[in-house]
Length: 293
Image 1 (cartoon, rainbow, N blue to C red):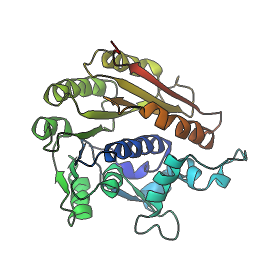
Image 2 (image 1 turned 90 degrees about the vertical axis):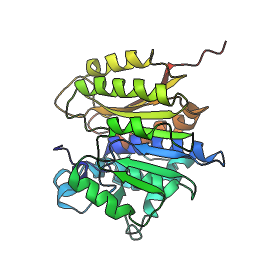
Image 3 (image 1 turned 180 degrees about the vertical axis):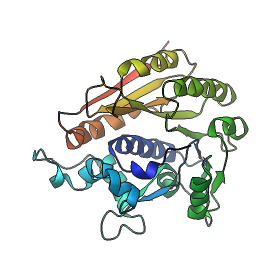
Image 4 (image 1 turned 90 degrees about the horizontal axis):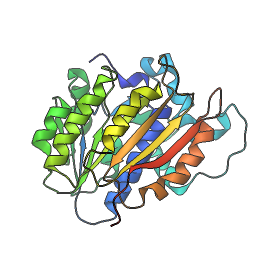
């Protein structure tokens, strides 16, 4: 309950998470039928980058600002044009009211999803923190497609799944205040969610500090019952220190067809722009592939 994303909005982990989210929503938009987005840890929805919180860390400067203003990158390496997916995603951020004259606001997952949704689509946003939930309601009070629930997002999945649209995405993005034990909570939530909605897409963001902390979760995913599981990771430091955020990852259960092909060039392009004291590294592979037989 102490975590506030305002300190971290737009950092390198958000770049990975939200570019993958954007790709997932574009995949859902490929069909005309409505879809649902369910966010278990929604936050307040939008963050001012000139706020006191963002100013204390300046994390967005080594994240979203690196992609929007590549000339700021300290390495000085020339960069070519960004892949079309990244360009579309960045343009959607710059179209946000308030960003007409430069990057002032960074949209969280709920707002990025809502910007991409069509009239018939819907979003169910869960946020337990009272102040964050209040801000979330204020942000979407005119949007009939968006429903805010001030409750535990894991527990809410029991009531929200399957969605009436029968197709869509669940985003699980907790603050990991419980550290390694958070993975066990996610595993239990996913087990029940897959029983209720086996065809849904589930995207889970996770931090990378020590690789050993993440490995049991990845092993569990290989037998979780999903049809396929795609892993995308970006590391800006070696994954050998528990004292800092070295990288982050996204695992996508029941990943859309050819999502790996969609994400490969964006990951390749963003990695050198996000590197810090040492070159950054990316990974894109299947933890679980659908049996072709």
